[in-house]
Length: 315
Image (cartoon, rainbow, N blue to C red; front, side, top):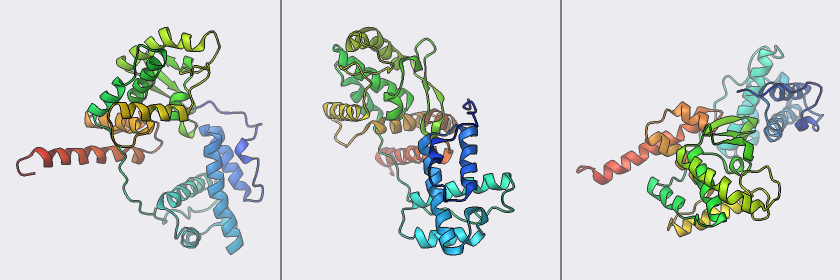
């Protein structure tokens, strides 16, 4: 569901600086803020990327971004991004494309100078994936007879069942988890978007046990909106959870380096392995672009090839 439009009287926090750039950049960011409800960080990233091109173009050609020509963008990339990582160059190109699409739609420009610009080629990087057996071993590691172990078990089960980002998991409020409906509401995910994600019966069971038997003892009468809390009665921190996952991985005899994000990768890959539609996986992960999700189909294919080579008589 799209975020509700914000009041046009207030100014996006990300626009409170850089008044020296083309004013159409501020108008474009206003449109993103009002229409898409993007977060401060996302708006700031757009602003910085557009400002970098605007400042360069003004210094070298005496024009502003709204006056850019077809060759200007190629010249900028050749001049500034020759030694830049492809991911950085493509992120900036993506910001330019969205700005010029808006400018063309609003009739601020006559033609889009980005149409002929190609993205930089990026090496395909496959994420580290745990097998289903390794995930099961990790999920069995917490000692659920203790309050902290029960909390940790509920967090790990939730992470694997939902594919949340670590920041989304530790940022969950108690009211964001609806055990009756079996869903988790992610508020202000990456890009400022909200989404609903199914929790699943197993994770819901452990979250319910945590809420009934561990969370009240950890809070000890203190008030905290967060679903997952520490012994001090405040919200779990990303760094603490990161260290906790590493500890349980060692107890589960998982040798490879592991981070909480690996469970997000496992969530997506295991769904694809079991036949989930890629569009559904994209929606669950909160990816804005399905090309980001397509890496998991590659991982699944590589796994199938490895199994074929291992077990087929002519492999």
